[in-house]
Amino acid sequence: MFATKRLGKELLKMKEHLPPGITIAKSENLEEWHMDLQVLDDNPLYQDQTYRLKFTFGSKYPIEPPEVQFIESPNTPSTPRPIPIHPHIYSNGIICLDLLSSAGWSPVQTVESVCVSIQSMLTANTRNERPPGDSDFVSYNRRRPRDINFFYDDDNV
Amino acid sequence: MDPPNDNEVVDLRSLDYVSRYDDHLMCAICHCPFIRPIRLQCDHVFCQKCLNTAITSFAGFRDDFTCPSCRTPTKGVYLNVPRLLINMCDDIRVKCPFAVEGCEEVMPRGHVQSHVDKYCNYRLVDCPNDQCGNKTRKMDLHPEKCMHALHTCQHCGDDIMEKDYEEHVQESCPSLETTCPDCQTTVLQQEFEEHVKACPEMNHPCAASKFGCPVKVTRSELAAHEQGCPLVMMGPYLDAQNSRLGSLESTVRHLQQRNEIYEDGLSNIRSTLFESSRGIPERDPNLPQESLNEGRLSGAPEQPENDQWIDLPNVYSTNANTYLLSLHESLREEVGQLSRAITDLDARASMAIMNECLRIKEDMAHTNAAVSSIRMQVQWLMNPRLHQAQRMAGARNSNNGNGNTHDGDDTATAGPSNAAGPSPGLLRPRRLSDGGREGTKL
Image (cartoon, rainbow over all chains, first blue to last red; front, side):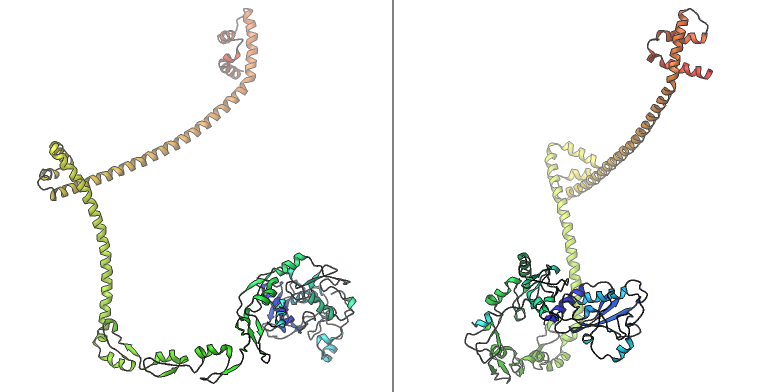
């Protein structure tokens, strides 16, 4: 109830106005939204690409953080949705960002503010690499993002 | 009424906010206008309930809880939020929470609770029957009777709640029947309209009823009748006639209008004529000479008619006067045209003159300016020469006084210069030419 009310209000507001580079891709229900993200400056790593974020909301949103990760589908030739390369984004789309953990989350965050944070995280990146141990993590991880204990060691993002 | 009902608290977060509200009045957690706001040490404001949920679900120690907005550690929670803020939040207009039930009230949020408690007739209250778990609108509530007991409709066999029973029996029961007035069969009320369209017994008028066929028979017999009905056969022809009549009528109306206009004009002319014809016979006996003169003046055809005037005033006078009047009219028109032309010409001429005048004036001003500038230059040029001449004249005067005359050319001019020696202003014109000549000589 709390979550749906709040999400309804957020959606209304986002349909009125969104920051540049961010668009709503799917918001039919109040449990899972897809947002399209573009990096607007001329960072060669992300130029002319569109990435898709999947938000999964629990019933305790916004007290508890939503699950946010990059997804590849729908990955048709006309709408390619790759996983952006970034030292804190695993190739399966999972994002290591303290903002999205329950410790770093704050209930005043919104879908819009999360999108803006991730957008700026991409903008600021210059390293064309995946996180260390990416292939191991991707092949062995079966946990959901919120159950993973990340160590947030990089203060530069 | 039931005491627990009266204490029912309206959930202000789930209200439908009608007016737009400022984002600053919005709790950052629930995105609603603040509900019972409280303030943290860092001056960030949240709803009490939102902050409580945030604190209870906070993972770390309670003392480590930080402000959700700015992450400042919060030592204390203050309840004294500015009254202004609370008032502004309570002033936002909302719909009654029972808008779904039909309440159309829109009120400031601060009044919702009292509206629901006391005034809203659409509020759902518990049924007086303890066993019944249903709710009833306050306006429908019977003090002692449960409106939710099921009654079985005698006609359709459905179980209907008492509150809906009356409406069901009278209107919506699917088994309600009516009798068709034409074919006397009974049909279900729901299907009656369809039946009317298809009823074979219903009396339909003949297709030629507008042309006067009085026959009105059932649909099955109608086809047979229409095949033999003479009026139906004549139908197309009658239709064509009707349209022709219509067009003729419109033409006649048009002509009538034109005729009226002409008649008006004619009566105008007649009345003016009558006035003038009354004027002339009055004069006639007194001054026959004048009438003759008038006739002669206005042209030859008038002469005989004027003579007959007295005998047949009606017929001829009308003709003559018409002619006279038309002549007069045309003359007047001509005069009018002439006067218009004259005024036009006058205006044009005066315009032209004015333009010329302006140009000439301008030219004159130019010339004046040129002349004055030339004069200035000449004066400037002449000034030194004038002084020289004066000096020379003074010298010559002294020479003349000595009785020494040697320059014949100068003596002719020296005479007057001597006379006007003390006043150089009078001397100037002569001196100018002299000086010029002397200049060229030199």
